[in-house]
Each structure stands twice: as C-alpha cells, then as structure tokens.
Image 1 (cartoon, rainbow, N blue to C red):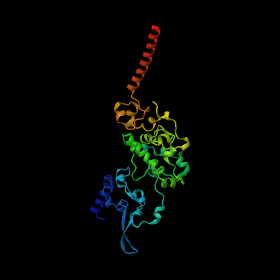
Image 2 (image 1 turned 30 degrees about the vertical axis):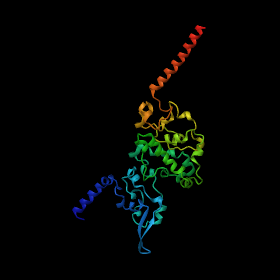
Image 3 (image 1 turned 180 degrees about the vertical axis):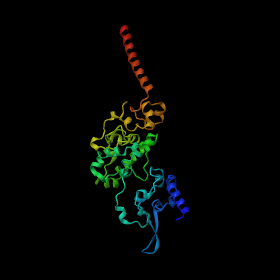
Image 4 (image 1 turned 135 degrees about the vertical axis):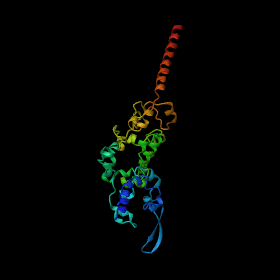
Length: 311
C-alpha cells in the first residue's frame, strides 16, 4: 500500500463517526439491509430455480424507517448490533438462534451513560412481576423496541404525548392477544373489563400512564421499572387527586414540566389536556376559594345574628 492509500485509509477511519452521525438510514432504498426490511415485498434471485422471485416479507421483520431515523440508535448501523454475517443473503438460518444484545450489554457499567442510570433501572426491573414470572426471557426489548425507541418522557413538554407513548408500550402487549400469549402463556385479559372499578376510564387512559398505578415509584429514577402485580396496583383515588399527588413524583417529575406541576397557571389549566383535578392547583384560586368559603360562613352567621336580634 503506498503513502496515498494510507492517508486515504486514515481519513476514512477518522471520518466514519462523523459520516454515520448524519444518519446511516437517510436513504433506505440504498441501505443494504433496508432494501428488503423496509418493504412488504422482497425480490431475490432463487439459485435453485435460477430465476428472480418476489415474496411477501414477514411483517415482524419490516422496519419502520421513519421511527428508525427518529430513534436513539439512528447513528448505529444494523451490524453494530446484529451479526455481520447478516450482510449476506440468504441469511444463515442459525443466526436467528443467537441471543440478541440487551441494553446492559452496551450501557451497563458505562460512565458515559450514568445519567440514565441503566444499572439502577435493571435492579428495579428485576423486582418487577415481569422478571419474576419470565426471568431472563423478558428483556428490555419486550417493551422498548431498539429500532424505534425515543426518550419521550425526558424530551417532551407535552404531557399527553408522554402518556400516549408510554401507554402504547404497555398496550402493545396487553392489548395484543398474540404478543401477550407469547410472554404470559395465557390469554390476554380485557383491559376495560379488568379496570371496571375505575371511574371515567377513557379520561384516565388518556391523561395518566399505566405505570402511575402499576409501579412502585422511586423518586431518584426518571421512570420506575418495578412493575407490580395486579393485586398490588394502586386503587386509591386520593393518591393522585390531592395537593401532594404521587404524580409529582412520576408523571410531573421532569424538569421541563416541573413549573407547571408545582406552581400552576391559568395557561396550564386551559392548555394542558392532561390537567389532573386535585393534582395541579392554581395557588391564587386556592386562596380565593378559602376567602369565599369563610365569607359565606361569616355572611350566614351575621344573618343569623340579626334575625336573633330582631326576634
């Protein structure tokens, strides 16, 4: 290799991270993996019949390319996580039997990601009903799709968006007969029927996350991962509908929502679709309500006093 080739090789090695940072999935049709995995139909050359053929792609293997580009792993190529042997097609059937990487394989014990507390999350998860029932078979990927996962709770200032995204993770299994049976080994219970004790179900499902009632909240973690059994789920309305609502330690704990949760404002009440009666209070209105209450009591006492004098 001459000096010119060496310089080019060094440049490419140094430039690769910056090139990938632009997103390796900018053009799905020209990406080796997404040529097939972004389409419902795959075309390939059948070496046995010696001709081109088309077949339907297994829907479980179709990747949402928009979600992929918006996800946290958008700068990783497929073979950063999957075996490099997948670069060849047809794929070796034995590759599908290999265990998938878990989040802790990359993030565990790495000081770069200390802010996200992956190790603590794993400790809490191992206390959950999911882990107690399924053990190692229940991985992070059962809830968080590594291809499309977004840290919505950390980045969004819209409570409804946070709730919708989080509940979507839960309902992807608990509202899907096939996926639920795959993990639980039994039929999926009807969500509405199981929650028939809950008043205004639709409002609750739209405005609070499943995990508000189904996890053991830990103040030091952004999102609690200790999913409790249904017998231990919260059924006390006052826990959320009061001034010291547990929602402030869970749904409203994020820095970008804290001022709205703690101080309240007319704007919050009018614009926040997830306004929780009792949990979010406007201080001036609260003081005004006390004044009106005591003035009403005083008015009644004065009225009784003058009636007594008149008699």
